[in-house]
Length: 239
Picture (cartoon, rainbow, N blue to C red):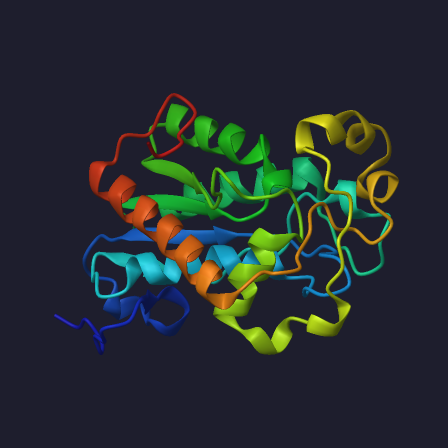
């Protein structure tokens, strides 16, 4: 048996060889986006968060493997800003379905850890198809009930916890702070640029690394619990 070196951290699929994978494992695939996150956060914020949640959830568990993140998603609502690269919903769905079919040939289970709300409903649609085909696939959303919409206090706090060097503190400024439900008609009609000139939906000022660490641990704890229960709903969401 060749299992490769085992550490107390997460086992990363990209660092394995095929001979390390002689036992079926659950594969976590972080799914993010490359899109504007205001003047203060990096374009790959969603992928960073999804990868961190997956990595932390897998720490010390040899039954879990963390795949390299899918760093492009459906971000059409952000295309009014430079830097955004979106593959759209049709392409995203095709990628997720093909990844699921491929992983099912050797992995015990596959979980898409989604960090970008704009990837919905495509993620559950793809997972529902894979489950209809008889594959053990599910998804988990990186979200907190009290979080704000985009590039505000929530995401800023999490990035401060993960890597404060990428947060441009001098550029912290509020955007449109209206509730998301009130903004939806504008967002649907004209994208984020129609609702916020700086791309921020919320107010990042006052965010702290401590707050971000608490939010991360909340999401990590939820993912671990749901992986243990393994009770996907009819759309494949882990509950």
